[in-house]
Image (cartoon, rainbow, N blue to C red; front, side):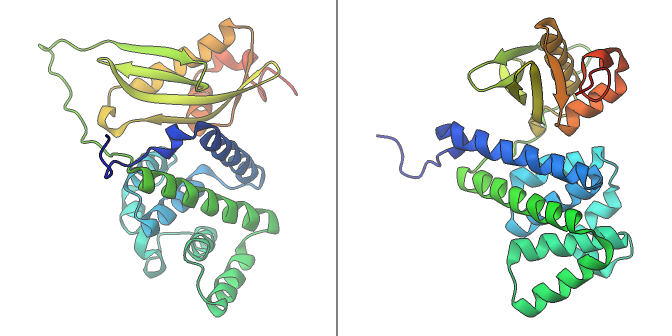
Amino acid sequence: MESTGRRVFIDRQTPEAFRALNTVASAVRAAGAGAGLDRKLIELINLRVSEINGCAYCLDVHHRAAVAAGASERELAVLSAWRRTELFTPRERAALALAELTTTLPDEATLDRDYALAREHLSDEQVSAILWVATTIGAFNRVSILSKHPVRPTKEKPTMTESTPESKVVRNDEKKRYEVYYGGELAGFSEYEERDDETVFIHTEIDGAFSGKGLGTVLAKHAVEDVIARDRVIRPLCPFIKAYLEKHPQYDEHVVGKGVTR
């Protein structure tokens, strides 16, 4: 009999529900981009909500994502005290206020005050997108906390005299994701959906224990080239894959919004 104290990884136990949540997250990311919200702002929201909820796994993932999106370590260090600093723009402050009220659901007076602040700097479209971003990351926080997703220590890089395990990327059609393995261990994945002739990348994640090894680039390169080899076109909703494609224009003719017009 299994230990009653073991946590159930609910994302793996009920994958169809988790895929649906990722689909919602993709729609929310698209809404944010359509409303003119930059990736840095989105990641600040993800981090602030994860701080309030105490989700270690999401903090680890989105700290790295925020840095990649242009947030400074100084901004991230004081994020929990953003009201007491002058490091954030009026729009960022308005977004963070909305993120906090979505997460904590305070009394009506506080809701009205922060909502009024937000309306001074954000359009209706932007307010809606930010509320959805905060709602969605809150859901992911609960999935990770209740599943007890681990945050593993970063493994030391091997010295030049040590043998370096090879990385390997495989396409997992059942889970609809590309997986990168390092030394035989799953180190990360890039999730996708297939719509007609499009492969839509929605989320990419590298385990923090394997950071600094360039595995994200290895994963992105293999995934992109596999899609092209199967005569499909790429729609990069995932910020990581989108950033990779921006740096590699040789793939433009296969990318929706670049060489492919829809």
